[in-house]
Length: 342
Image (tube, rainbow, N blue to C red; front, side, top):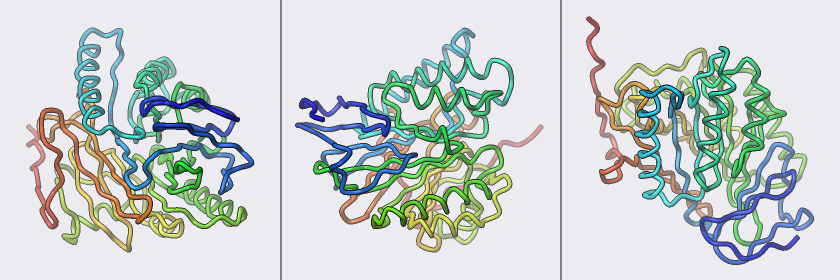
């Protein structure tokens, strides 16, 4: 299967496996020519420069309904933020870590979801989605279908409850990195996601492929996000109590089993810090949407994640419209008091 040369901002979706080609020059991925074995729940993204994979994380975007005049105005402000940080990031792909349409299993959620999916599809570049606690529908299958079929989408979680992987390949088709997207649902990572992570490990072993360099994206933080702040390991901003829901700390062992280097979550809009525990870096992404709380205390934006897939080194920085990139100094802890209740 041969493809014509394409520019940096162009890419091609082909086949049931969801091959996405990105970058400059001529690109081709034949099923028989893979140097690795794609799994049924994987998408493939090809990049030109494995030493500088760039991912833009958006989280807690909280799009409103365009038919409501006030929410439409808020949506325009959120869209402006996204356009600004996209221009700054010059990313290879966008990963949204949940809370975009506020379905909450109520009538009208499917309509709101469709509006949101169309907004991400219109961004003009590869994007992926990890479900948030507010992204619940009366018919979640409608969401799986829309996310899978949307233009430019890398979503492959329809048959696995929203859990899937993105295999990032270099110019020669060799896998250089794997991005793991998990659906933390309403209560956080639990036995369901842990069982799927076991399946991923087993399926990878069955192929005979080497365990890839892995990074994980989900919405609700795990318990160790609390531990790294309380122990002084974390650096960054804390503006609210960490809301880990029902996650009991047991998920970290499964992430370590997969060889995950770093996790990126959202959920808590006024927390933007990171710290390492047991060899895994835990990062709170910068909340994005104007229609959500916290913007009066921490500016809305996104998170640029830069990965050297050759060495495994990675870094992150918050992107904020009109401001320089921001990342805390090592050991810097900024506590922002929560508003007083009247």
